[in-house]
Length: 124
Image 1 (tube, rainbow, N blue to C red):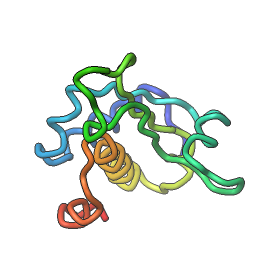
Image 2 (cartoon, one colour):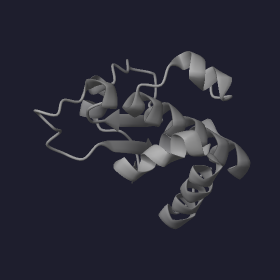
Image 3 (cartoon, rainbow, N blue to C red):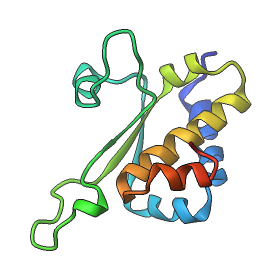
Image 4 (tube, rainbow, N blue to C red):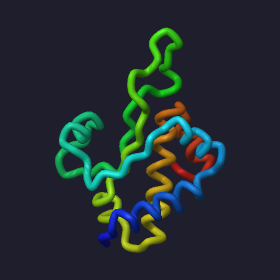
């Protein structure tokens, strides 16, 4: 499946709307950026080995590691990688759900949400 940037962005907006408010409220403090695919440095940063793929990536300082003395110098970001997400899914519905799952997991990295809580919310 290959979509235009506009079509993909529309599905991202749809997926954001499906995220529970408990999690979605934290998007106010994050920049969401769509890239065609991850760079080599992003793959290395995430510890992704050759032959594996990356659907999304959080870059920033998690809330649990913030300091009032040394605030972050750059905005926190979540990257979504369009081509790997499209390759992972066969239908628009699957893509919307996978984008939602990817966003939730990346937001969880930002807010320090446990894997157990993610499972309780249906994302584990």
